[in-house]
Image 1 (tube, rainbow, N blue to C red):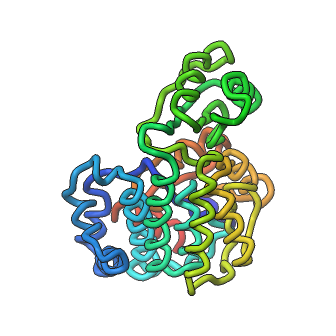
Image 2 (spheres, rainbow, N blue to C red):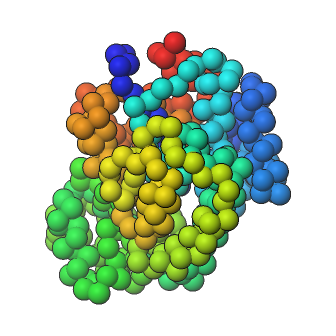
Length: 317
């Protein structure tokens, strides 16, 4: 790996799995401390839920979001504190929830406040739309234009719209369940190879999340640890780099009800910042798959266990 410029990336909701982070917890005291800090911040047994809980309960938005963040920050702390890596990334990026984790990594928000914030974010997003009323679906094979045309054809008033532009040919749509179902039924007429409903409980990154965003903005004001980021943060809503705390807060507010521009974010990191090496810290390898689809020839290591973190450490020492 040529490591003149590299990026840290953090996964979003969907990468949770029972047992996540256990190897880090058992192998490193610094990782154990992160899990304990999360439990203390939330006044709950999040760690127990992650290691031996019910998969359905872990998948609840209010649990999945802080759980995923906790594993990512544990991996980060193992790299820096246990393995002695002096991190100097060109930028950081996270997918949806992962953007909050990126902020913690860049010193823009404390972990304790961030984990409380994403727990509240999950609760507010779930409350914004009654369970069963909202839905999301992944589509394969459509361009951004055809996905937007599909949504407009079944819902001219925005009841369903693209929510995640994840990679070429992979776009997630979000909205009211009845309109998402109509879009799935019509998707092949607009060039989709497949359209599959996702196992989520709310229409994330849609206009129906606006009430949650307004309440979340009040939560932002209660956080005392906001700082300018020490590294560039690639914002989901603009696919541009941010560092100023006030700009970050405004971007996070908009992110709640706006599409995630992940494909454009990867292109910006590659083409504008010259990043060719990516380290995905946390549970799963979802972002690695998306990044490879967005840009051929890049180098990626996904690390959520000691062995993979050692591999990253060797690259960065």
